[in-house]
Image (cartoon, rainbow, N blue to C red; front, side):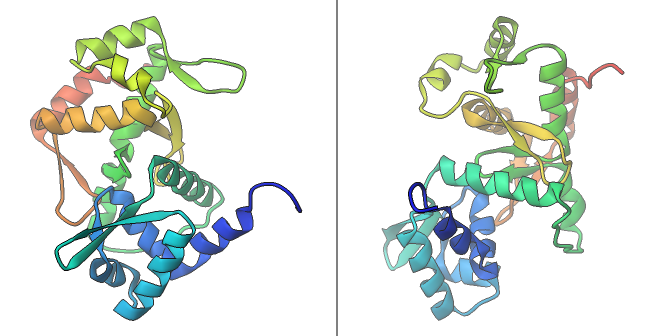
Length: 231
């Protein structure tokens, strides 16, 4: 293709295994140092610096300096969205890497996906919202939106929808969950859910990990608020 977006460059940037590991580590939404990212990617610090430079030049990462350290993050939610889509497609097509260990069941149960909740509980929340017609396809392009009943439900949780609607991001977006092979909720509402659940003390994040722990009280409340669809 002579004209149009250069998808080959993006594909090359994310296609390198070390860079893929760096990007995956930053899907936690946290800023990490070059040393931390080198450890995540299993490479030397010098090699990591070269990869980080390429990712920044490609517009996928940004950095901030604090003292002697440089912290790296994804360049924005659109980068997270792109990575989520690629990860979901890879899982759907059976391109999975097997990493055994105690974190595997926890990662599948609940984890952070850039700035929203993913895993079994997140899929359950999406299914529950859709079954109760709180979510609906809003136009012929298949984008998701909140119904009037859905807005009322969100307001009852204490979440203000107005600033979410004013955001440049979509309010609701279906994100294919790589572990469940079904959709969970992304977009500004998905991010608001994650913050709200944390503020309520229902969930907590593991340090230096994407794993989310759901407290007993949190599981009770989430099961009550988001009952599974009736079969």
